[in-house]
Amino acid sequence: MSDLQQVQSFWERQSCGEVYAQGQSERDFYLSETAARYALEPYIAEFAQFDDYADKTVLEIGVGMGSDHSRIAQAGPARLVGVDLTQRAIEHTGKRFAALGLQSELKTDNAEALSFADETFDRVYSWGVLHHSPNTPQAIAEVHRVLKPRGVARIMVYYTWSPTGLMLWARYGLLRGRPLTPMSQIYADYLESPGTKAYNMDEGERLFSRFDQVKLRVQLGFGDLLEGAVGQRHRGPLLSIAKRIWPRWLIRAISRHVPFGLYLLIEARK
Image 1 (cartoon, rainbow, N blue to C red):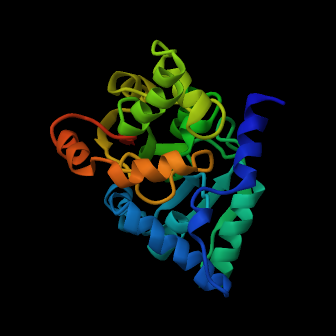
Image 2 (spheres, helix red, strand yellow):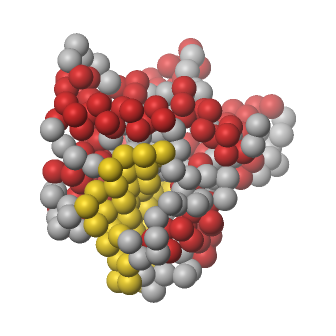
Image 3 (cartoon, one colour):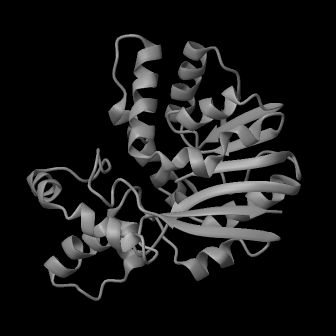
């Protein structure tokens, strides 16, 4: 099985956020996931700037359960396209849009070889997806290719120096007698789908070096604070204990003074 197929297989088992979806009707099922998503991650709306997509041609890479995609649709884009590596996510988002009366062009696609012509979109949006791609630099190159001149990409990828990363290092490196395990291996082997990557600031800037203007900032995530569900791979009594004693106040205090969090938020203009 190729690296790409391994990633696809992992996310076909459960879309990101699916654990929060509840309700008898499809409308309630999807809206419950949306409510949970934005309660845990209120910073998404500030970063995404959903109102900016009005009257624009917009591509979202990695639609997942479709919450952000529906917010983009509600802004009134001139054209909206959503792609995902998995059929599961496309089906979820299609059912959500049918239940909410929204429209989008949805299809499976590979972020490393997008099936769109050069300079097709005014905006490209992707939250927490491209770090799962086996060749993330190629996926970013594709974002640049399909953007129109002066187009804007808003992309979140994982940041290396985070409470999440340090927790995983402590559990799978330090406690197993392998304290010199590099963080890149920790993320690739233990965070989410196989090969997941994280980047520091310099690496993030290099990823987007072909863009004319790039702004980066780090955001503390709900996983850093051990709030909500923290991924398909991490459950059990040890996690339950950690959630009760986790020093959230200290982590929040540190993040106010130094870049410390799982999310690297990048806005890049072509």
